[in-house]
Image 1 (spheres, rainbow, N blue to C red):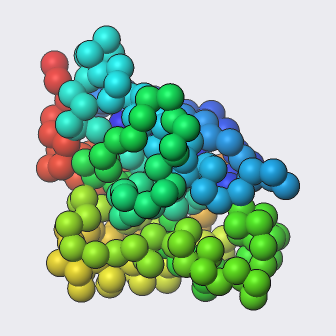
Image 2: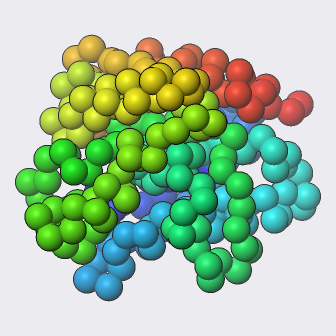
Length: 242
């Protein structure tokens, strides 16, 4: 499992998915919890996406020494990290595959789990300007770049299985983003599951661990989400090796 953290592309750290990584590891999966370069005045789309591809390529290149099966690697992200994970699954032949990645190019992940992922940057509310910072320009000046960074713009037949998880009261990334992507994937004949969590938000949710449920708890860590994630992984990348 390759994990990609949230943070609006310009913030966050892999520590933000530490509880998710720990839970997956306890279930028997090998987990790589990765950082990527954050958006700034000099780092823009597609640099964070290129870094994510490089992380996947590194895992496959070192699969032997890590005792991994390179054919059974899924990518899971939350919020901005989910956008990156979805782009890896839906747009594998684009130039966002980093040409300077020391481990070379790689094939898409076997499966993708998206937690509260932005799928259409052309319609995503951007009150704090994080999307514009990631793209490097406002929507009015670069609509083609916003589409290029939107997973829904790359939907077509042959996508890997995708699990979409979204809270119905997410005020940061409206759950309509996942609904739109779900409809597009179904229309293309792709395998997709949408889990909508009634009453759940973006970072304030009941956690799967005892006593959890404070600010900072993600929807993918909800008790309702966890068995769905495990079932999805069992069906797509298989049971963990003993």
